[in-house]
Amino acid sequence: MTQQEILSTDALPYLDIADADFSIRSQAVLDARDAAWCARTPYGLAVLRYDDVQKMLRHPKLRQGSYRWPAHSGVTGGAFARWWEQMLLSQEGSEHARLRRMANPAFSPKLISSLIPKFQALANRLIDGFAEKGECDFIAEFTEPYATGVICDLLGLPFEKWRELADIAGDMGLALAVSYKRDQATVDAATERLFAYAEELVALRRAEPSEDFIGMLVRANADTDQLSDQELLDMIVLAIFGGIDTTRNQLGLAMAMFIEHPEQWALLAEQPDLARPAVEEVMRVRPTVTWVTREATETFTYNGTEIPQGTTVHLFSQSAASDPAVFETTDFDITAKRKPHFGFGGGTHHCLGHFIARGDMTEALKLLAQRLKNPRFNGEVLWLPDSGNTGATAMPIAFDAA
Amino acid sequence: MKVHVDMSICLLHGQCVIAAPEVFSFDDDGGLVWLAEVDESLAADVEAASDACPEQAIVIG
Image 1: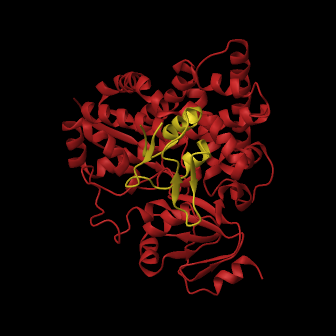
Image 2: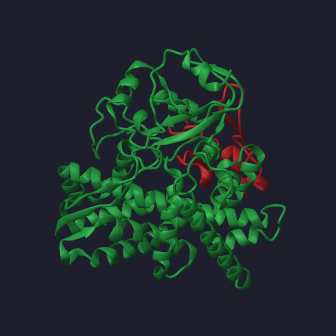
Image 3: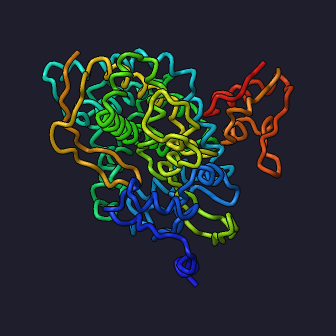
Protein backbone atom coordinates (compact mmCIF):
# COMPACT_ATOMS: atom_id res chain seq x y z
CA MET A 1 0.00 0.00 0.00
CA THR A 2 1.37 3.45 -0.77
CA GLN A 3 1.59 6.26 1.74
CA GLN A 4 -1.10 8.14 -0.19
CA GLU A 5 -3.60 5.28 0.17
CA ILE A 6 -3.09 4.92 3.88
CA LEU A 7 -3.69 8.60 4.45
CA SER A 8 -6.63 8.88 2.09
CA THR A 9 -8.61 6.54 4.34
CA ASP A 10 -8.41 9.13 7.06
CA ALA A 11 -11.21 11.62 7.67
CA LEU A 12 -8.78 14.53 7.83
CA PRO A 13 -9.26 17.70 5.74
CA TYR A 14 -7.26 17.94 2.51
CA LEU A 15 -5.08 20.87 1.38
CA ASP A 16 -3.58 20.85 -2.13
CA ILE A 17 -0.37 22.61 -1.14
CA ALA A 18 1.40 21.54 -4.34
CA ASP A 19 -0.85 23.88 -6.34
CA ALA A 20 0.99 27.13 -7.12
CA ASP A 21 -2.29 28.97 -6.44
CA PHE A 22 -2.63 27.48 -2.96
CA SER A 23 -2.43 30.18 -0.27
CA ILE A 24 -1.19 29.55 3.23
CA ARG A 25 -3.58 32.34 4.31
CA SER A 26 -6.67 30.93 2.61
CA GLN A 27 -9.99 30.21 4.32
CA ALA A 28 -9.35 26.53 3.56
CA VAL A 29 -6.39 26.54 5.95
CA LEU A 30 -8.38 28.26 8.70
CA ASP A 31 -11.25 25.79 8.24
CA ALA A 32 -8.86 22.85 8.32
CA ARG A 33 -7.22 24.19 11.51
CA ASP A 34 -10.67 24.46 13.14
CA ALA A 35 -11.60 20.95 12.04
CA ALA A 36 -8.47 18.99 12.90
CA TRP A 37 -4.93 19.24 14.21
CA CYS A 38 -3.60 18.33 10.78
CA ALA A 39 -4.60 18.05 7.14
CA ARG A 40 -3.66 15.65 4.38
CA THR A 41 -1.60 17.07 1.52
CA PRO A 42 -0.18 15.70 -1.75
CA TYR A 43 3.14 15.26 0.13
CA GLY A 44 1.86 13.84 3.42
CA LEU A 45 0.48 15.83 6.35
CA ALA A 46 0.27 19.51 7.28
CA VAL A 47 0.30 20.35 11.00
CA LEU A 48 -1.80 23.43 11.68
CA ARG A 49 -2.03 24.22 15.40
CA TYR A 50 0.42 25.91 17.74
CA ASP A 51 0.91 23.21 20.37
CA ASP A 52 1.32 20.47 17.78
CA VAL A 53 3.80 22.44 15.68
CA GLN A 54 5.83 23.17 18.79
CA LYS A 55 5.91 19.48 19.79
CA MET A 56 6.59 18.16 16.31
CA LEU A 57 9.44 20.58 15.63
CA ARG A 58 11.51 18.46 18.03
CA HIS A 59 9.66 15.13 17.97
CA PRO A 60 12.17 12.25 18.29
CA LYS A 61 10.45 10.25 15.53
CA LEU A 62 10.74 13.10 13.03
CA ARG A 63 13.83 14.20 11.13
CA GLN A 64 14.34 17.32 9.05
CA GLY A 65 12.44 16.57 5.87
CA SER A 66 13.23 19.13 3.22
CA TYR A 67 16.19 17.06 1.97
CA ARG A 68 13.50 15.39 -0.13
CA TRP A 69 12.32 18.67 -1.62
CA PRO A 70 14.11 18.16 -4.98
CA ALA A 71 12.64 14.65 -5.31
CA HIS A 72 9.20 15.94 -4.28
CA SER A 73 9.48 18.57 -6.98
CA GLY A 74 10.33 15.95 -9.58
CA VAL A 75 13.98 17.01 -9.81
CA THR A 76 16.82 14.50 -9.79
CA GLY A 77 20.43 15.65 -10.07
CA GLY A 78 21.81 19.05 -10.86
CA ALA A 79 24.02 21.37 -8.81
CA PHE A 80 21.27 22.65 -6.53
CA ALA A 81 19.87 19.23 -5.61
CA ARG A 82 23.40 17.87 -4.96
CA TRP A 83 24.15 20.76 -2.58
CA TRP A 84 20.71 20.79 -0.96
CA GLU A 85 20.77 17.10 -0.12
CA GLN A 86 24.26 17.23 1.44
CA MET A 87 24.38 20.55 3.30
CA LEU A 88 23.93 21.15 7.05
CA LEU A 89 20.13 21.41 7.04
CA SER A 90 19.76 18.01 5.41
CA GLN A 91 22.05 16.20 7.86
CA GLU A 92 21.00 14.50 11.10
CA GLY A 93 22.59 13.11 14.26
CA SER A 94 26.35 13.22 14.75
CA GLU A 95 27.10 14.49 11.22
CA HIS A 96 24.71 17.38 11.74
CA ALA A 97 26.14 18.12 15.19
CA ARG A 98 29.71 18.20 13.83
CA LEU A 99 28.82 20.64 11.05
CA ARG A 100 26.69 22.78 13.35
CA ARG A 101 29.53 23.07 15.89
CA MET A 102 31.85 24.21 13.08
CA ALA A 103 29.40 26.86 11.92
CA ASN A 104 28.12 28.22 15.25
CA PRO A 105 31.07 30.50 16.17
CA ALA A 106 30.58 32.48 12.96
CA PHE A 107 26.99 33.27 13.99
CA SER A 108 27.54 34.06 17.67
CA PRO A 109 25.34 36.78 19.22
CA LYS A 110 28.58 38.31 20.53
CA LEU A 111 29.43 39.39 16.98
CA ILE A 112 26.19 41.31 16.48
CA SER A 113 26.92 44.49 18.43
CA SER A 114 29.92 45.27 16.21
CA LEU A 115 27.74 44.81 13.13
CA ILE A 116 24.91 47.16 14.21
CA PRO A 117 26.64 50.37 13.00
CA LYS A 118 27.28 48.67 9.64
CA PHE A 119 23.60 47.69 9.35
CA GLN A 120 22.59 51.28 10.12
CA ALA A 121 25.04 52.77 7.61
CA LEU A 122 23.84 50.38 4.93
CA ALA A 123 20.15 51.10 5.57
CA ASN A 124 20.71 54.88 5.54
CA ARG A 125 22.78 54.70 2.37
CA LEU A 126 20.02 52.82 0.56
CA ILE A 127 17.25 55.10 1.84
CA ASP A 128 19.34 58.13 0.76
CA GLY A 129 19.21 56.73 -2.75
CA PHE A 130 15.44 57.11 -3.13
CA ALA A 131 14.16 59.28 -0.24
CA GLU A 132 13.85 62.46 -2.30
CA LYS A 133 11.86 60.75 -5.07
CA GLY A 134 9.09 59.88 -2.61
CA GLU A 135 8.78 56.46 -4.24
CA CYS A 136 10.77 53.31 -4.88
CA ASP A 137 10.51 49.66 -5.65
CA PHE A 138 10.95 48.51 -2.08
CA ILE A 139 12.37 45.13 -3.14
CA ALA A 140 14.79 46.27 -5.85
CA GLU A 141 15.91 49.42 -4.06
CA PHE A 142 15.86 48.35 -0.43
CA THR A 143 15.27 44.78 0.73
CA GLU A 144 17.42 43.11 -1.92
CA PRO A 145 20.50 45.35 -1.69
CA TYR A 146 20.09 45.47 2.11
CA ALA A 147 19.90 41.71 2.65
CA THR A 148 22.78 41.18 0.21
CA GLY A 149 24.80 44.09 1.57
CA VAL A 150 24.64 42.53 5.04
CA ILE A 151 26.11 39.34 3.58
CA CYS A 152 28.84 41.38 1.86
CA ASP A 153 29.68 42.92 5.25
CA LEU A 154 29.83 39.49 6.87
CA LEU A 155 32.02 38.04 4.13
CA GLY A 156 34.28 41.07 3.94
CA LEU A 157 33.24 41.85 0.37
CA PRO A 158 32.77 45.37 -1.02
CA PHE A 159 29.13 46.49 -1.18
CA GLU A 160 29.42 46.74 -5.00
CA LYS A 161 29.26 42.95 -5.18
CA TRP A 162 25.65 42.96 -3.96
CA ARG A 163 23.98 42.91 -7.39
CA GLU A 164 25.80 39.81 -8.53
CA LEU A 165 25.10 37.92 -5.29
CA ALA A 166 21.46 39.02 -5.22
CA ASP A 167 20.88 37.79 -8.78
CA ILE A 168 22.41 34.43 -7.93
CA ALA A 169 20.38 34.08 -4.72
CA GLY A 170 17.19 35.09 -6.51
CA ASP A 171 17.68 32.45 -9.19
CA MET A 172 18.58 29.79 -6.63
CA GLY A 173 15.54 30.73 -4.57
CA LEU A 174 13.30 29.60 -7.43
CA ALA A 175 14.14 26.08 -6.25
CA LEU A 176 12.17 26.60 -3.05
CA ALA A 177 8.90 27.37 -4.82
CA VAL A 178 6.56 24.68 -6.08
CA SER A 179 7.69 25.65 -9.61
CA TYR A 180 11.28 24.36 -9.01
CA LYS A 181 11.21 21.77 -11.81
CA ARG A 182 10.13 24.32 -14.40
CA ASP A 183 13.01 26.61 -13.36
CA GLN A 184 15.66 23.93 -12.83
CA ALA A 185 18.08 25.12 -15.55
CA THR A 186 18.13 28.64 -14.08
CA VAL A 187 18.47 27.28 -10.53
CA ASP A 188 21.41 25.02 -11.38
CA ALA A 189 23.27 27.67 -13.38
CA ALA A 190 23.00 30.06 -10.43
CA THR A 191 24.15 27.37 -7.98
CA GLU A 192 27.24 26.69 -10.09
CA ARG A 193 28.05 30.40 -10.15
CA LEU A 194 27.77 30.62 -6.35
CA PHE A 195 30.10 27.64 -5.90
CA ALA A 196 32.65 29.28 -8.19
CA TYR A 197 32.34 32.39 -6.02
CA ALA A 198 32.79 30.38 -2.81
CA GLU A 199 35.93 28.75 -4.24
CA GLU A 200 37.36 32.17 -5.04
CA LEU A 201 36.68 33.39 -1.49
CA VAL A 202 38.33 30.31 -0.01
CA ALA A 203 41.41 30.71 -2.21
CA LEU A 204 41.73 34.34 -1.10
CA ARG A 205 41.48 33.43 2.61
CA ARG A 206 43.92 30.56 2.26
CA ALA A 207 46.43 33.02 0.77
CA GLU A 208 45.59 35.67 3.37
CA PRO A 209 44.06 34.32 6.63
CA SER A 210 41.36 36.45 8.26
CA GLU A 211 39.09 36.49 11.32
CA ASP A 212 35.82 36.82 9.42
CA PHE A 213 33.23 34.15 8.64
CA ILE A 214 35.09 32.58 5.72
CA GLY A 215 38.38 32.84 7.59
CA MET A 216 36.97 30.86 10.52
CA LEU A 217 35.62 28.12 8.27
CA VAL A 218 38.86 27.93 6.29
CA ARG A 219 40.72 27.41 9.58
CA ALA A 220 38.35 24.58 10.54
CA ASN A 221 38.99 23.05 7.12
CA ALA A 222 42.74 22.90 7.83
CA ASP A 223 41.82 19.63 9.56
CA THR A 224 39.76 17.97 6.83
CA ASP A 225 38.44 15.39 9.32
CA GLN A 226 36.58 18.27 10.94
CA LEU A 227 35.41 19.95 7.77
CA SER A 228 36.16 18.60 4.29
CA ASP A 229 36.77 20.80 1.26
CA GLN A 230 33.30 20.03 -0.09
CA GLU A 231 31.66 20.70 3.29
CA LEU A 232 33.49 24.01 3.51
CA LEU A 233 32.08 25.14 0.16
CA ASP A 234 28.62 23.76 0.98
CA MET A 235 28.62 25.76 4.23
CA ILE A 236 29.65 29.03 2.55
CA VAL A 237 26.97 28.59 -0.10
CA LEU A 238 24.41 27.95 2.66
CA ALA A 239 25.44 31.09 4.54
CA ILE A 240 25.20 33.28 1.43
CA PHE A 241 22.01 31.78 0.05
CA GLY A 242 20.33 31.35 3.44
CA GLY A 243 20.90 34.96 4.38
CA ILE A 244 19.88 36.78 1.22
CA ASP A 245 16.62 35.29 0.02
CA THR A 246 15.06 35.00 3.48
CA THR A 247 15.89 38.50 4.70
CA ARG A 248 14.93 40.07 1.37
CA ASN A 249 11.55 38.35 1.49
CA GLN A 250 10.92 38.92 5.18
CA LEU A 251 11.54 42.68 4.99
CA GLY A 252 9.20 42.94 2.01
CA LEU A 253 6.52 41.07 3.92
CA ALA A 254 7.12 43.43 6.85
CA MET A 255 6.51 46.49 4.66
CA ALA A 256 3.33 44.94 3.26
CA MET A 257 2.05 44.33 6.79
CA PHE A 258 2.79 47.90 7.84
CA ILE A 259 1.21 49.37 4.71
CA GLU A 260 -1.94 47.48 5.66
CA HIS A 261 -1.62 48.73 9.27
CA PRO A 262 -0.49 52.39 8.99
CA GLU A 263 -1.15 53.14 12.68
CA GLN A 264 1.45 50.48 13.57
CA TRP A 265 4.02 52.13 11.29
CA ALA A 266 3.38 55.53 12.90
CA LEU A 267 3.78 53.92 16.32
CA LEU A 268 7.08 52.36 15.30
CA ALA A 269 8.35 55.75 14.08
CA GLU A 270 7.46 57.30 17.46
CA GLN A 271 8.92 54.44 19.48
CA PRO A 272 12.03 53.01 17.75
CA ASP A 273 12.49 50.49 20.57
CA LEU A 274 9.46 48.69 19.17
CA ALA A 275 11.53 47.66 16.12
CA ARG A 276 12.77 44.50 17.82
CA PRO A 277 9.30 43.23 18.87
CA ALA A 278 8.03 44.38 15.46
CA VAL A 279 10.36 41.89 13.77
CA GLU A 280 8.87 39.11 15.90
CA GLU A 281 5.30 40.20 15.26
CA VAL A 282 5.83 40.38 11.48
CA MET A 283 7.40 36.93 11.52
CA ARG A 284 4.48 35.61 13.54
CA VAL A 285 1.74 36.77 11.18
CA ARG A 286 3.62 36.86 7.85
CA PRO A 287 6.72 34.62 7.92
CA THR A 288 8.61 34.13 4.66
CA VAL A 289 9.15 30.52 5.71
CA THR A 290 5.50 29.49 5.79
CA TRP A 291 6.21 25.88 6.64
CA VAL A 292 8.98 23.74 8.08
CA THR A 293 9.39 20.20 6.81
CA ARG A 294 9.88 17.02 8.82
CA GLU A 295 9.82 13.32 7.90
CA ALA A 296 8.83 10.30 10.03
CA THR A 297 11.86 8.06 10.64
CA GLU A 298 9.55 5.27 11.85
CA THR A 299 5.82 4.66 12.11
CA PHE A 300 4.28 6.29 15.18
CA THR A 301 0.93 7.45 16.51
CA TYR A 302 0.29 11.10 17.35
CA ASN A 303 -3.09 12.52 18.48
CA GLY A 304 -4.68 9.22 17.48
CA THR A 305 -3.36 9.45 13.91
CA GLU A 306 -0.95 6.80 12.66
CA ILE A 307 1.92 8.47 10.84
CA PRO A 308 3.70 5.88 8.67
CA GLN A 309 7.47 5.83 8.30
CA GLY A 310 8.56 8.11 5.48
CA THR A 311 5.56 10.47 5.77
CA THR A 312 6.43 14.08 5.01
CA VAL A 313 5.02 16.41 7.65
CA HIS A 314 4.79 20.14 6.92
CA LEU A 315 4.63 22.26 10.08
CA PHE A 316 2.66 25.39 9.17
CA SER A 317 4.46 28.20 10.98
CA GLN A 318 1.97 30.88 9.98
CA SER A 319 -1.18 28.91 10.74
CA ALA A 320 0.26 27.81 14.12
CA ALA A 321 1.34 31.29 15.18
CA SER A 322 -2.13 32.73 14.57
CA ASP A 323 -3.90 29.82 16.33
CA PRO A 324 -6.81 31.35 18.31
CA ALA A 325 -6.49 28.53 20.85
CA VAL A 326 -3.21 30.10 21.99
CA PHE A 327 -3.39 33.77 21.00
CA GLU A 328 -6.22 35.73 22.61
CA THR A 329 -6.05 38.33 19.90
CA THR A 330 -4.24 37.57 16.68
CA ASP A 331 -4.42 41.02 15.10
CA PHE A 332 -1.12 42.53 13.98
CA ASP A 333 0.10 44.46 17.04
CA ILE A 334 3.77 45.24 17.60
CA THR A 335 3.14 46.12 21.27
CA ALA A 336 1.52 42.79 22.19
CA LYS A 337 3.33 40.25 24.36
CA ARG A 338 3.28 37.01 22.38
CA LYS A 339 4.37 33.43 22.73
CA PRO A 340 7.29 32.58 20.43
CA HIS A 341 6.59 32.15 16.69
CA PHE A 342 8.11 29.47 14.46
CA GLY A 343 9.50 31.72 11.74
CA PHE A 344 13.03 30.45 12.43
CA GLY A 345 11.93 26.83 12.70
CA GLY A 346 13.01 25.14 15.91
CA GLY A 347 14.76 22.23 17.52
CA THR A 348 18.11 20.94 16.32
CA HIS A 349 17.73 22.71 12.94
CA HIS A 350 16.74 26.11 14.38
CA CYS A 351 17.89 28.82 11.96
CA LEU A 352 21.66 29.30 12.27
CA GLY A 353 21.62 32.97 11.25
CA HIS A 354 18.72 34.19 13.39
CA PHE A 355 20.78 36.56 15.59
CA ILE A 356 22.05 38.33 12.49
CA ALA A 357 18.62 38.32 10.83
CA ARG A 358 16.93 39.70 13.94
CA GLY A 359 19.64 42.34 14.28
CA ASP A 360 19.66 43.53 10.69
CA MET A 361 15.86 43.57 10.33
CA THR A 362 15.49 45.50 13.59
CA GLU A 363 17.86 48.25 12.42
CA ALA A 364 16.22 48.40 8.99
CA LEU A 365 12.68 48.78 10.34
CA LYS A 366 13.79 51.36 12.88
CA LEU A 367 15.33 53.63 10.23
CA LEU A 368 12.67 53.03 7.59
CA ALA A 369 9.87 54.00 9.98
CA GLN A 370 11.66 57.21 10.87
CA ARG A 371 12.43 58.25 7.31
CA LEU A 372 9.47 56.97 5.23
CA LYS A 373 6.12 58.38 6.38
CA ASN A 374 2.75 57.04 5.22
CA PRO A 375 4.08 54.30 2.95
CA ARG A 376 1.50 52.98 0.46
CA PHE A 377 1.43 50.67 -2.56
CA ASN A 378 2.16 52.55 -5.77
CA GLY A 379 1.60 49.96 -8.50
CA GLU A 380 1.31 46.23 -8.86
CA VAL A 381 3.05 44.10 -6.23
CA LEU A 382 4.42 40.84 -7.66
CA TRP A 383 4.40 37.84 -5.33
CA LEU A 384 5.98 34.41 -5.16
CA PRO A 385 3.45 31.63 -4.51
CA ASP A 386 1.89 32.16 -1.07
CA SER A 387 3.37 28.93 0.29
CA GLY A 388 6.81 27.41 0.86
CA ASN A 389 9.23 30.34 1.08
CA THR A 390 7.14 33.33 0.07
CA GLY A 391 7.57 37.06 -0.47
CA ALA A 392 7.29 39.87 -2.99
CA THR A 393 9.55 40.11 -6.04
CA ALA A 394 8.49 43.70 -6.82
CA MET A 395 6.79 46.21 -4.53
CA PRO A 396 6.36 49.76 -5.85
CA ILE A 397 5.65 52.06 -2.91
CA ALA A 398 5.18 55.80 -2.43
CA PHE A 399 5.79 57.66 0.83
CA ASP A 400 6.32 61.10 2.31
CA ALA A 401 9.98 61.70 3.09
CA ALA A 402 10.55 62.74 6.69
CA MET B 1 31.78 27.16 37.05
CA LYS B 2 28.03 27.17 37.69
CA VAL B 3 25.50 26.50 34.94
CA HIS B 4 21.82 27.37 35.07
CA VAL B 5 19.09 27.18 32.42
CA ASP B 6 16.08 29.47 32.70
CA MET B 7 13.37 26.93 31.97
CA SER B 8 10.74 29.68 31.70
CA ILE B 9 12.22 30.65 28.32
CA CYS B 10 13.92 27.39 27.23
CA LEU B 11 12.11 25.91 24.22
CA LEU B 12 14.10 22.64 24.20
CA HIS B 13 15.70 23.24 20.81
CA GLY B 14 18.70 21.22 22.00
CA GLN B 15 21.43 23.47 20.60
CA CYS B 16 23.25 23.20 23.96
CA VAL B 17 23.20 19.40 23.66
CA ILE B 18 24.95 19.75 20.29
CA ALA B 19 27.46 22.33 21.53
CA ALA B 20 28.29 20.76 24.93
CA PRO B 21 27.10 17.14 25.05
CA GLU B 22 29.09 16.43 28.22
CA VAL B 23 27.11 19.09 30.10
CA PHE B 24 23.63 19.11 28.59
CA SER B 25 21.41 16.19 27.55
CA PHE B 26 17.79 15.14 27.12
CA ASP B 27 16.26 12.57 29.47
CA ASP B 28 13.97 9.78 28.28
CA ASP B 29 10.92 12.07 28.53
CA GLY B 30 12.55 14.72 26.35
CA GLY B 31 13.28 17.05 29.29
CA LEU B 32 16.55 18.99 29.45
CA VAL B 33 19.06 17.96 32.13
CA TRP B 34 22.42 19.56 32.78
CA LEU B 35 25.34 19.57 35.21
CA ALA B 36 24.88 22.51 37.58
CA GLU B 37 28.58 22.59 38.43
CA VAL B 38 31.18 21.89 35.75
CA ASP B 39 34.94 21.73 35.61
CA GLU B 40 36.79 24.67 34.04
CA SER B 41 38.06 22.30 31.35
CA LEU B 42 34.52 22.39 29.90
CA ALA B 43 34.23 26.19 30.05
CA ALA B 44 34.68 26.69 26.32
CA ASP B 45 31.96 24.15 25.53
CA VAL B 46 29.54 25.73 28.02
CA GLU B 47 30.17 29.17 26.54
CA ALA B 48 29.61 27.79 23.04
CA ALA B 49 26.31 26.31 24.27
CA SER B 50 25.28 29.59 25.84
CA ASP B 51 26.07 31.44 22.60
CA ALA B 52 24.26 28.90 20.46
CA CYS B 53 21.03 28.91 22.51
CA PRO B 54 18.41 30.58 20.30
CA GLU B 55 16.45 31.74 23.36
CA GLN B 56 19.57 32.81 25.31
CA ALA B 57 18.32 30.79 28.27
CA ILE B 58 21.69 29.63 29.65
CA VAL B 59 23.18 31.53 32.57
CA ILE B 60 26.83 30.93 33.46
CA GLY B 61 27.78 31.82 37.03
